[in-house]
Length: 121
Image (cartoon, rainbow, N blue to C red; front, top):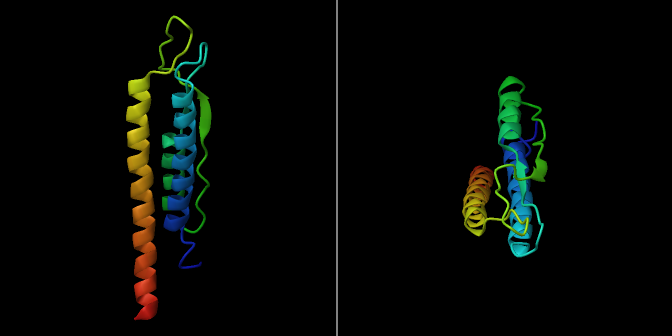
């Protein structure tokens, strides 16, 4: 097993990819806030992350890739024009997603800094 490609680093990388995808979806929703009939999209990966985390605990050398599901936001309420994008909800989701994305990057960077320090001695 590679010290760089360990299961935790692999899972963090998958989580960073997933939050980047969610950011693009949320940005698309915001871009279509005034488009009549547009249905807000949502991505779920929390259950996929839980499953991937469980697989890491059971088989620490082979993590599963994080699977994401993209579809219509079931909690969105349509307006008169049929658009389901709620600007406030989307901005909250965007802020939460940005926090998660930044945290995962910082954790991964910290892990690599530790490896770098160990190599330098």
